[in-house]
Amino acid sequence: MPLSPRSPGPVRIALATLGKCALALAVFTTIFGGWQWVLARQPLPGASNREGACVLWFVGSSTMSRWSSLQDDLKPWIAQNRGMGGATMAEINLHIAHDQARHAPQAIVYYAGDNDLAFGRSVDETVADLREFLAIKSRLFGQTPVFVISLKPSPTRWDRRDQQDRYNLVARTIAGQRPDVTYVDIVPLLLLQGRPGPFYSEDGLHLNDEGYRRWTIALRRALDENLPRNVLQRCHSESP
Image 1 (cartoon, helix red, strand yellow):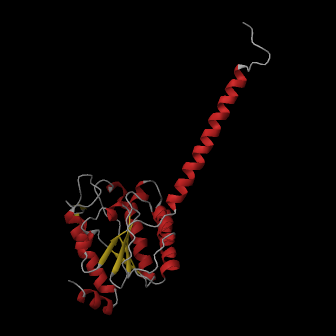
Image 2 (cartoon, rainbow, N blue to C red):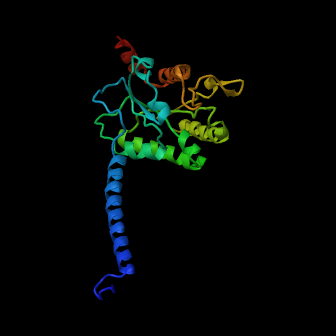
């Protein structure tokens, strides 16, 4: 049976179908992209209404977020875990820039950059993101101290060791130039005879209990040596 002159041809049908698909894709992209935009501008997780001189924020990637014993390890400090699993420094910067905390913590403990180098960011780009984090911190929270923990020498990312060393060297230099930044070197505590020790979980990337215990030792020493004496006395006196 011949086609009616008014019957749509194959090309017209194909174009109409493509148009509908394009419209559906545009709607999906708009909705999904808008939701991603909203999520990216949420504050860091782990927000709390607790305030006071003894509050510390622990900001960073999964090595921070997986620190399940943090509150017990850092007593009598009020340790708020605001880490994000798998996060890059740029993601952390975006979230903290939209933080809605009314009061600054006594100090911020920061660990990030491990993922960035592993995902292909250069040392210079990673350092630039660290500087951006410190700039955001200064804008939002003034001279609140930041304790920057060195990147850890893990078995899984041992091939990134040279990059990590270069990043750590610059982070140490930045800390030497700013009174509000302290560099906490945990690398020697996690090595045995120049190689990663048995301080990691089965994935060879995240710390096990002994690894976190060693972090705790280094961090407590840094807090005791760099926070104001009156704050230390007050927080330790409030210990239950």
